[in-house]
Length: 456
Image 1 (cartoon, rainbow, N blue to C red):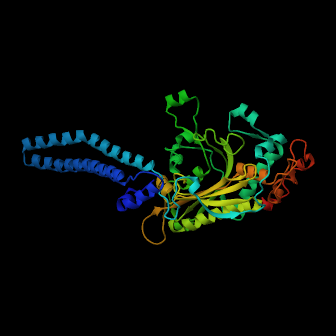
Image 2 (cartoon, one colour; image 1 turned 90 degrees about the vertical axis):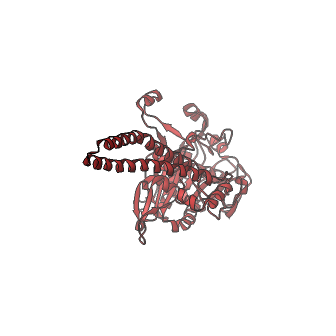
Image 3 (cartoon, helix red, strand yellow; image 1 turned 45 degrees about the vertical axis):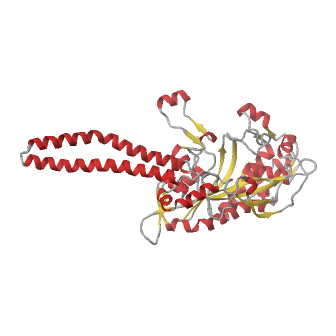
């Protein structure tokens, strides 16, 4: 959400930010809506002030026994009172029109974001080659299906397309990846683990800017039948598209002390996305699913620390792939490829030998005060008076399903088995190689992780 006062103060900078995203300048329109809002409020307030003044004159007229004037004044007060609801409604409507327009406009990019139209204009920031960029190998779904441990056909019978059933050793590998990431971020990176609700209200989705613009990309959960819900007026709840939604909204409608910042949260959750705009894209395999697991990172900071926190968050996400020895590159997204709420985004792209290309495995974004304004999330600086909005950041630390793909493709062997990365050994119960149904059964049955309680 944008600050209309900031737009009034510097309309040229606001329009420049929008045009860098490929949008039309909007400052004149927004200032016009704000003028209309101010005029409507002024009209309502003016009518109320006039009523108050006339009411005093009625008393004076009656005291002077001027009944004719008293009656005329009373008639005028009655007329103004009758007009008041329509004036108040006009003021509310003008305020709502401005708020809805502001809510539909994406964040303005930071000045150092490269300008461009789409992903082809993104700028590479760094690269980690790790195990090396193998040019040979099968795709993850070919490996998983051959092992009998990745079943898309049964998932389609259960839920339709873009779902998968994982079994046995691959299911354990996915679980191990999520636990490894959580332990890394909580044990070494200072994030607080959270188990948030998976169903959230409209207000939470609005706060992080999934609503209203991206309504068609979400899954709504309605209690009872749709007909019953419509009759009762029951509110929708939404399956979270990412744990960014509940984690960021932990500070909604609150005023924090500066000493509390930064707040750093992490969560491993299922995520649900309708993928409404992804028809025909990545239809095979696990790259683009309606349901997937992800470890999310969220930071709440003071404005002057958000740039530093963004670099820190990126390093935390990179650490996952470095420990797994997965080749990756980091790109800075250009203005035309950024997310709606982002002021600057880094994407981490893992190398996938089966596709012979890099694919996104994490996005780390700084949103400035864009989400905080939608959530009314503020803090009180130690120096100075009053309160100001916090800055919010979010990132994948990382997408578990895509990490599973990257491990399978980068650690595959010529015989179709997959070697378990050494970083995951403590989570795999002694299993060192995934061979599919009938393979490594002794290791598979050795029980739980060898970690001690102190390492959990």
